[in-house]
Length: 257
Image (cartoon, rainbow, N blue to C red; front, side, top):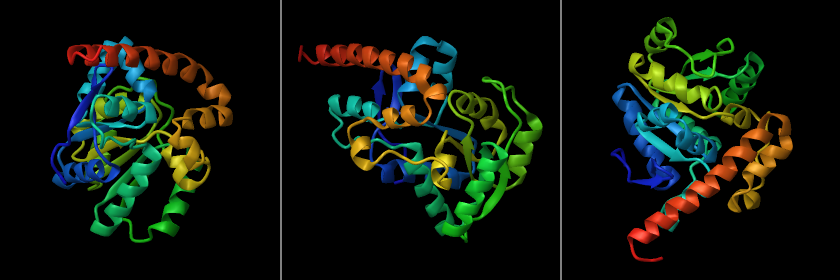
């Protein structure tokens, strides 16, 4: 599949619905075209943020696709009647895309992360994907939360010939960066947050049974309490409230409540 996948509104934003394979194929379809586009990978945090920040909502709405990163996001889609909706997390879709890019000879670029994080990722991918065509590795200096357009960076990435750019700047910085740079880069950008460190082995993912219960956020909170504590306390709570309102309105329109 390389067409546009179905989307389901989740607390006000259109989120792609489907399996990892179908959504991954749609991303590859965009990348093969070489036209400017960006893909957001959204768990509860960015969707909650978009409900209270109209400017950030416009960032998500400008994406070619928004993926259901968090388990609760795909649960809302299923409760709205889309039984095939699956969680498509950054640490899952990124390795899948990298393997396909290697098989097809599709050039990729890695933008983000600290220098040591990027170096660890480079070593890990060299072992697992020796034929991967990497057009560039770039660890930028610390950027503001809403980075301005940098024409030199956009030109450099475009000139590399990359068709798929993995952006690891964390939310919401990576979404703002993609929205402001996409038009100047002839490639598909995908923001994958901490997936750089998951792929390199610097961070360990929660066991599958924890992920199946939608509690991966708790595993990450225990691992990084100072960085993630406030985010999860605020945005997970907001998401639950907004999701209940969303589902009640959805079911009300269909006469179920």
